[in-house]
Length: 79
Image 1 (cartoon, one colour):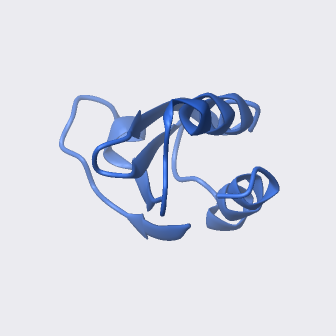
Image 2 (cartoon, helix red, strand yellow; image 1 turned 45 degrees about the horizontal axis):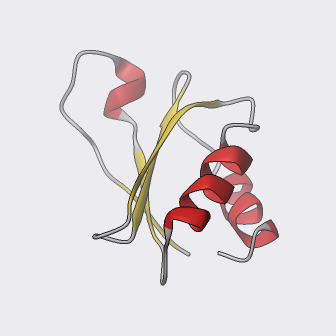
């Protein structure tokens, strides 16, 4: 997975610190695995997968997310 941070214009600070990851291949099964794994991380408030764009947008509960924690979680599921 390639990580890059993006600032998203929205109402809350957490939403402004969304982290977007590019994923090489993604299907509906991948969406389920990714969502299930990332929502287990204590600092994650939400996960949105876009199959067409092959991206995963992760919203923190507050502040920013640990790139290392995201990378390791994605690596654990083979993404």
